[in-house]
Amino acid sequence: MMNLPRLGVNIDHVATLRNARGENYPSPVKAAKICEEFGADGITAHLREDRRHIKDEDIFELKANISLPLNFEMAPTLEMLDIALKVKPNACCIVPEKREEVTTEGGIDVKKNHNLLHTIIPKLKQSGIKVSLFVDADEEQIIASKDIQADIVEIHAGEFCRKIENSHDFEDNLERIKKASQLADNLGLEVHIGHGITFDSIVELAKIPEVKEFNIGHFIIAEAIFSGLGETVSKLKVLIKENRDS
Ligand code: PXP
Image 1 (cartoon, rainbow, N blue to C red):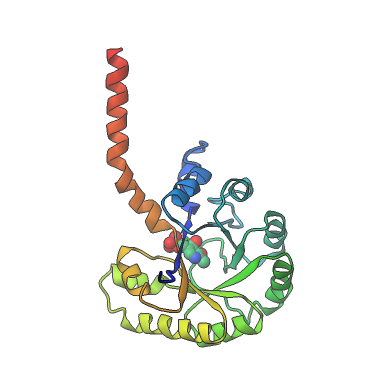
Image 2: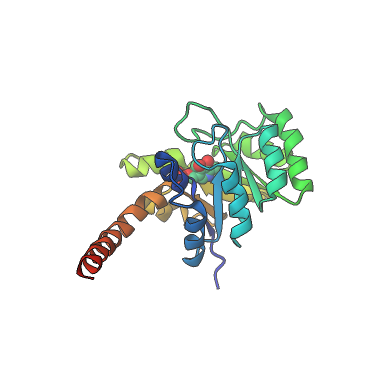
């Protein structure tokens, strides 16, 4: 059987929805279990510095309650390193973080963050955690990722995916992603792709032979509204009827 790329599902926005009402539902762990049941290969969660979606306890509960590999997205800070060493996820994906951004805007500048990464990466690896760096499709960043001994690069596909969604010319972006994937693979880095992926963009990205994993979040949770909305309304109608009649 062909060696297919894995699908990691990012469940951050289940927590966004929960936090919007301050209730204890929808549960990220319940969502992760459904993803597992339906063939996801991994669960990704990003504990942001401002805890706007995933909270510390979510990360520990995910690790304790799911059997899929957990990919812990984190900023390169000593606080996050400390949490990662306690959680012991399968992998850590190190991402740049700005407080005011709506979502991760670009890849990490590996050279600019050299000192922090040089402290953090060996500690994660010694603890048996694979280290992934979220980088732009840029030759210098890929080479710097190899030099600093990352195991994986996750290539930022945000701009490419947005162009597809808006029917703009995406060929240059796609070419850059393909070249970066080849280079990373040649250097012995495992290639992942993430950010902004949708049904339309996965059609192109799935063709890149070097890619071993996709990480997709916002679109899956958004699309799940439409797959589940009808069923939920029907179920409520049944409950109203059954209980009025009884
Ligand atoms: N990969 C990384 C490194 C990310 O930071 C994110 C966003 O948190 C994702 C994947 C998922 O992106 P999206 O929610 O746009 O699918």
